[in-house]
Length: 134
Image (cartoon, rainbow, N blue to C red; front, side, top):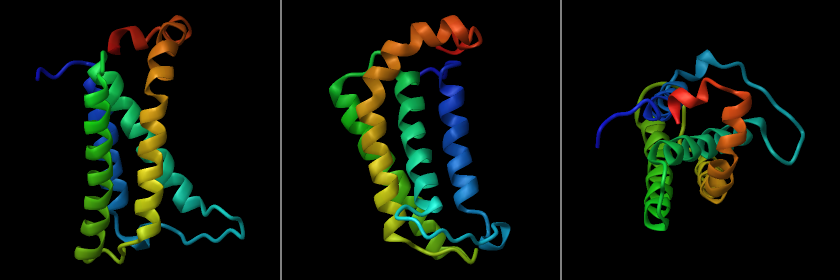
């Protein structure tokens, strides 16, 4: 597979997830909210929904089989990051809640692929730099 400009956001986002999730815990201030959805889970959800969308847009004419493969890869990547967090001495820990948030984000990302592809002409009209990527 030849690396194209459309792959750049997907690759950078993938690296961003790994680097931000593998930073030592001391790099983050602890926060607490008395809401049903913790901010941390919302961040995980968003990271993985965007991960799926960037990779799907990089693939362009994505088939159902490729969507399912992308879903599997996204879920596996989320699990790998959690395992790495627990095995490295970063003050981070394995959290099944993060895996659920990552997986839910991946599922939503796959469900939004068609909408994102259909919206691309409108987005390109108002964000011309996207013409160079997609």
